[in-house]
Image (cartoon, rainbow, N blue to C red):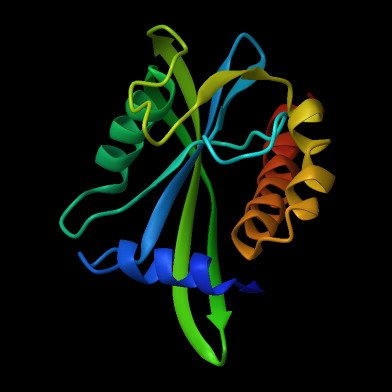
Length: 168
């Protein structure tokens, strides 16, 4: 996949990579047949996506998944399946950054569904896969390359999940 980013998005991405990050873990955490989704403070009303977080050098994917699930959703989880690896090129003005997303399904174990990192995350809640899938137009309406990527990633992940779980 490849997506063009605004200058601000590209600058933010490059700054997040200064500590050696070049990938993230994205989680589809299931609780009672629904997934836990998050909204960031700058998202327009009604926009949600799967929680995710950058992989720091030396961290295992499982460590990142457990940390980010708790920070962004308040949930303690158990990883279930590694469903996708997506390599993406983000570009701005003929400069490129290569990024990898590792996508997992996980099972909710415990915790109140409420963000712990309230600076980064505005809200966490449950949503059906169908509801989450229906948010693609809202993600694309922002005209932000990063959210267009999240829309494409979500679409691919839901396809994989439905192959293994049936239509939810």
